[in-house]
Length: 271
Length: 317
Image (cartoon, rainbow over all chains, first blue to last red; front, side, top):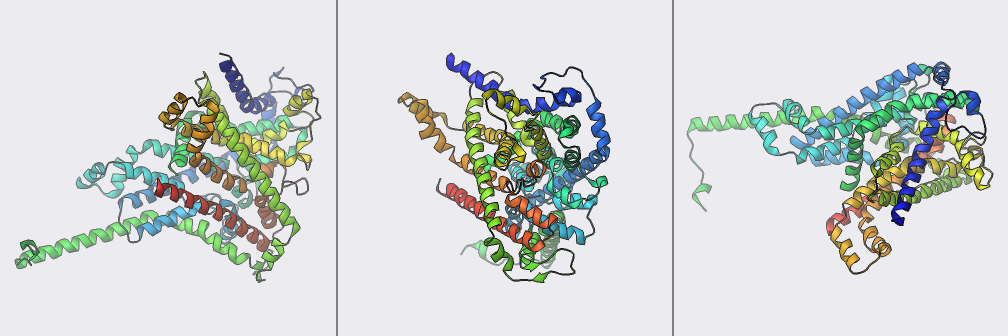
């Protein structure tokens, strides 16, 4: 009984450690400056105010950051997942000489750490004339190795009778993919889409180096700019900007949590 | 020899038909090859250009001196490597990277495993707490760093309210060369232990129960069962987490960029920060490429070791 009580105390403590900073963030955004800069701190806002959000929205072109983040995330995810699905289908169902070697070529890309490719990719993108463009933001990231691997492994578990039957019915490969294989892979597809979208939305270093004007910056870079410009004198404004950036991901996380968890654990336990 | 092996006389018409079928099959195969190429080409091209080519390009650039403005790089041979490898600043960078990575790896594994055991107990609300612990993993590093910059604020940050009651003076975390690195480690742990906990939890729930029960009946206490049974069975998962954490932490960038910018001085200049610094602030392409190749080689060794060990596990199981 006593052990159980201690376990509950620890559980509550753990919850506090992870919720604390988020509570601190949210409560700060609705506090007035005098309340943010007081000591000891106030745990509950005295007078609710939306002023911080207004200030943040005016301090930097957040509407533009939102737009850019949305465009890169939606297009980037769409193209990357399409790549993953098409490649996985080809490797799972079609014949081709040296298919095994090619597949190792795809998987080998996972061995190349992204950070190592920054400088050459920047130079390549500059040669293509893509600096400070959506193409430059999106295209270098749409090659897919891990998602291709996950999708292919999943396709191989599907009963072959189904795809064979589709072929006998005279359905072409693309039709089979769209009508039979994809509907049977919906949970895996959702997992891949959500994980990719989260990555694209949070992407930091590549947008930082490939864009150079406020009109092309994405939210994470916008946040860096906001924090640098506002300094420690306007935590209310900075926290409001942070919450605006976090909110969409928090919502998606709460809705799609089991898909994210499923995908990540699968990668670990199969590896 | 059986009758089946004997050549069969065929009617001329049938031979034509057989040739037709052959042609048909060949045409179908060619169509299949074409479709395969069409489906994989976009992905393979992007992978070739933006994942493999950079390695070759880096190797080339690392043999040159180039400010990225001059028309073409000047070939300098191995000068970048000899200079970098004998540079005390590089030694410090490497040391900081190793300390930073080591602390995060050990912290993630130990705390992650402890949390996994906690979440595996039959407690009410454990699912909700597991979600809370995992949430920071999917949040943007830039946003998490900004929140923690405020948490660490020596004047009005939440941590001051936790440290002062203990009778200690809160440090000026991010402006102190002693505290900036531990501060970053705290932020990365907060962001990533939930992931380690989740993977460990999946592992714990997949452990065979009979062994543990047998040991319990034989009188082994909880502690012994943990060290002698559970931990060894979880070794593959520990190994997976070890490798992925090392690879991830070596490339840690967003939190460092937002919180310290490699400073104060060079107190938090890791290998990943110095690649960015040399390439995109000092515009020294040769030096940045050299550091990139060094990072690539280090991580390649790490992943190769992983592949080897995994292979052995599969073969001898």
